[in-house]
Image (cartoon, rainbow, N blue to C red):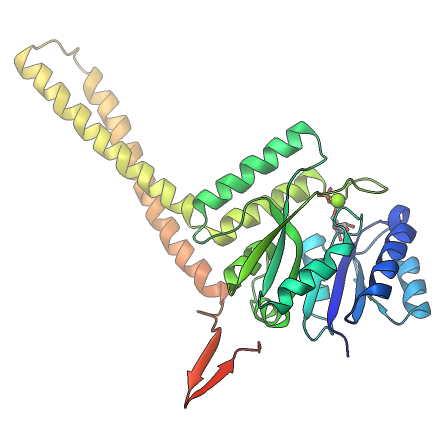
Length: 317
Ligand code: UDP
Ligand code: MG
């Protein structure tokens, strides 16, 4: 019987591998519940795959999932979430030991206290000033515009109950933004503040382009704002042009100090820009609806049902 699975995605992590395994072993040796570790090799081009196979053959608390090629961090974690055996739930950590695996004990306590999602909040980051500012601005923007509450400054480092993962696995969307999906599922969620460590060895595996893709998924998968913004901008422009028109009409009749031709030209430009923005926004609305439909998410997720004097908890699928 396994209680908790620790899910670790790995892409070219041979430099930290032995350190990672030692830390994980000393953690799972001591827990009061049983743990397995799921190592996902995300199509590494270094020696990571062999190292994963080796440890999994030696120690049956380690399971290896070897992907056919590099699928990216979010999909590597998704592969772990689709294939773990923990009865109570799963913890997701990075392979570079930026997320201390020791926290599994505190997270587990919260899980046993009835929380379904325990997400780690980074108190401080040990990254460059530019990266820190960009992250901070992004999370705040995302919170402002997303259609529901996605917590600030928390990444994928978290513990999820079995039913949360089952519900996430049932979401068929292709571009997966796990921290958004996790928040979308709902139930009782709690933040846990921690100091994010430095990467213990090797270089970051998140290129700027991967980072941008992640940020885009976060915005477009969980917010209607970009489309709504175009429509609103269109309406504002049209209203502004009408006010401008009225003002110029007034100047023309009472003061006759408006230069010939100028007003009409400017007016035509503003008015029709506004009309075009509205039209774009309207098309965007349709695309948005099509998008929401094909994404085919479940419409709602039930926590429990009380029927015939009995409480039936939603244990997932
Ligand atoms: N990772 C992965 N596939 C990728 C990129 C990264 O599985 O295509 C893993 C990586 O091995 C690490 C985790 O995702 O365990 C987080 O990556 P990284 O530490 O490089 O990101 P950063 O902390 O710099 O944002
Ligand atoms: Mg890292």
